[in-house]
Amino acid sequence: MVNTAATAAEGLEMFSRPSVRTLLDDVRETLRVSDTGAVELVSADALRATGIDQLVRAAVFGVDEDTRDTARWLILRAGHAVGIAPASIHDLYTARGRGDVAGFTVPAINVRAASFDTGRALFRAAKELRVGALICEIARSEIGYTDQRPAEYVSVMIAAAVKEGWSGPLFIQGDHFQVNAKKYKADPEPELQAVKDIIREGMHAGFYNIDIDTSTLVDLDKDGLDAQQELNYRLSAELTAYVRKHEPAGITVSIGGEIGEVGTENSTPEELRAYMDGYNRELARVAETEGRPVAGLSKISVQSGTTHGGTVLPDGSIQDVAIDFETLRNLSEIARREYGMSGAVQHGASTLPQTAFGNFPTVETAEIHLATNFQNLLYDAIPDELRDRMYEHTRKSFPEERKPSDTEEQFIYKARKKAIGAFKRELWDLPEADRERIRAVLYDQFTFLFRQLRVEGTMDAVAKHVPLPEIHRTSPADMRMKAAEDDWDLSD
Image (tube, helix red, strand yellow):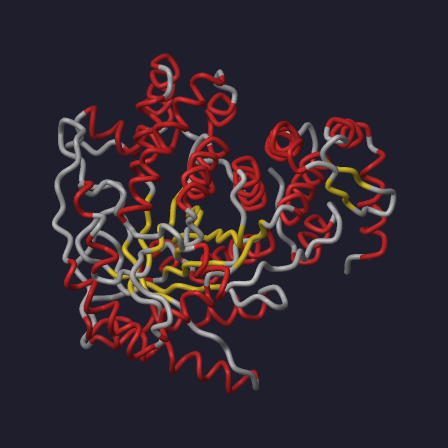
């Protein structure tokens, strides 16, 4: 059992430690911290000009845990002071399920590399176009190979929004918090517990949007759709109940389910109903057992013809994909009309032809996940010398990623994401001219996507349905205290 009074006292003692004292001195023209732990915003202009840069670097590369924890806590406080806080998109999505909002597709953007600069490009475009309906996300797998734990990721996204002057509820999502089918089959409990652990770590950091993915366990060899989806919907309900048990007071985390793994056969209305009817039965049992209502899903991920990262041709180019937009239209309508959700979610879409994106809001797709093409643009924009070293690292460190039939171009395209974590600091430390070039390229793409997905001006809809949450952490030691209470390992 953690002595919370002692831990809180430890949090205040942090402020007298040399590395933390240096950080506080560096940002004293921006933020001031009293002996009691109260934070005062001295100058929002100074915060954006220099202070947030110092804080975010300390949050990621601080010399010790005390410095990193303090920087992350100060970023959260600073963000709230200028109108930014992690939030859940649940209420906006349920409003869409009722028909109160419509006509746009929310982009969920996986920020893998050069995260502060990528985030700056994202929020610069979002501010100019008054985009409030957007999600920053990272998948369970990406957390590992990009070397970004949830607490760091949240801090960097808030810092990027502060730097660019964007404000509002900030939707940060755990993407594909997925059960590995092979590991689950070998030993189910440890694999399920691993998903629960990353869910809880994420929620504590500010991931108030979680995509539960147990679609890997759909068994098409079984007879009947209910039997095929049974393990999927049962574990989805179990993980939903886990989220509801541990979500912060006053916040209903937005949860998504998935009925078909991306890259498989296109989803059907019958599969959606089999999954949702089974899921709702399971959730009703949980509610009856616990004697309280348990909020369900706000969206449903389906398969309509894409693959993650696209299909790579021998020359390294991406094969054209024919999206079944009628599938998205029909499944989104069923999700709203019959189950009160916002609609269907499209994964694996960033490498689609540019002409495809305008179709998603036309068929009322609720959300679209975009990842690989931003990585592609980054690799094209970085200096040749750094890219060559990252490719060589990929060849030496991940030979198991190469299939016997792969050309060199196919192997590099599919495996180069694994080099991101090892080169994280070098990407952050690029000269400003290189970083500005990267931001400019990404800004253009974000601007294009926001317009195509019709999320311009959605700040008003977000403000109407999603209040800015209050801060739940009271000291820089709070994360460490919670980790000890919940037996997590949050070490970097």
